[in-house]
Amino acid sequence: MNLESWIHGVISLNLQNDDEFRRFSGKSFLHLPSRYAVESYQLYKLNQALRYCRRNSPFYRDLFLSTRAPSEDLRDLSDLASFPFTEPHHLSGNPYRFLCISQSEIARPYTFITSGTTGPQKKIFWTQSDLDRITSFMSAGMGTVADPGDTVAILLPDGKPNSQAYLLRQGILKLGAVPVVGDADLNANELLQLVEQSHCKVIFAYARKFFRLSKELEANHDLRRKGVRVLFLASEYLPDAMRRQLARIWDCDIRTHYGLTEMGLGVAVECEAQKGFHFNEAELVLEVVNPETGRPVPAGEEGELVFTTLNREAMPLIRYKSHDISRLVPEPCVCGASSLLKIDTVKKRLESTATIGVGDEIYPVLFDDALFDISGVVDYQIIASRVNGIDQLTFKVEMAPHQAGEISEISRKLRSDPVIAKNLSARRILEPEIEIVPWGGLASVGRAKKLIDDRR
Image (cartoon, rainbow, N blue to C red; front, side, top):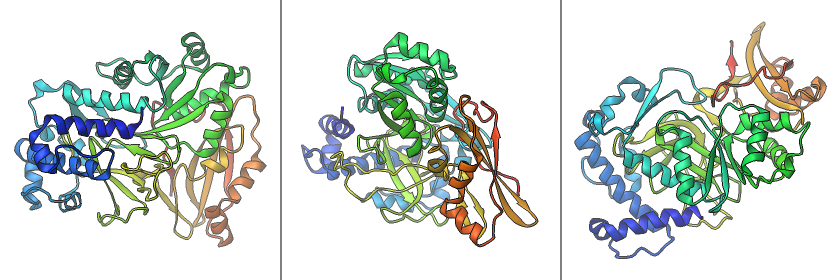
């Protein structure tokens, strides 16, 4: 399945069933695929969503009035910039003020702390129709890596009604494939048993957790013979060095997924070009803004990803600031999806950055490609401190149990990094310290992304 075809299928179905949309677009048939079709659909749905929020959401009714947001319909998608942002802390304040429906219509409340951050919990609400649209996109996203009849292993949290694993399972069934739900916290031997018993062709899992299990297994098992065709990995940035190792260990293709709970869990999938993500433009409008000024940045420049939902019933979100930093890729995608936008890989969040030395920014995955290029490295943690007024970076590095840590090689890799080399030369940081930690010492709980431990 091609994601571009699926999105235009959604647009075509709306055009067929909605007389008002046909009048709005001025065409009884939109030539597909085209960027005009996508933007015409989004503008129509966006105006509907804004009217819906004014009528039904106490939060947005008050916010729009207090900020004097336009009350007339938008004439262009760029006009959305005249509306105020929704901040993450709004969701943790009083999420029930976002509701556009009665509480009896809620099919799934979802309480969470965004991975990679700390702080108060947020709460999201979905109706059954919202959940149906989520599973529809999950089916389309899975269709980019799986065929009908394939067995797909799901290594996600389960146990609650409409859990992540359950929703993905429904999407896989809709595709005509066979889902097998495993424990998200299974150990290496349990993973091996699941793969051998299910004969799965695709595995959907959290990236670093799965990498850790794969490194543990490779010492005693030839995973290349297990028949896995694709690893579909989620939750966080996958560095090229880690991708290469996983491709070697399993002898399969690697794809990644970008998700955001607030936007309905599934947001974007990596195409065969493996250079960024096409996202669900049937459900979301994306802006990329300067995180300090809030102003749009030109295509190709890095900024904060801001999303607006188009069809959400229970809890629409208008101009929601994700705190994720990336950019729109201006060049055409080599996969051929000419009518879709493309997001570059998401490597950092606003909460995860720190400044060292002469003002250089660092973030938890900055050194991924250098360190994961060392075959035994499983994970690492950065601690920032200050000694006699000078910044000090300490790297806690965890090695696979069958491989010893070579501190000299790790040190050489870090010293060759441009940011560290520059600050060492200027004598603005001390030599990085390296500490080898025992196996399992950096294992994260759940899907939480690590932050820099800044002790300055």
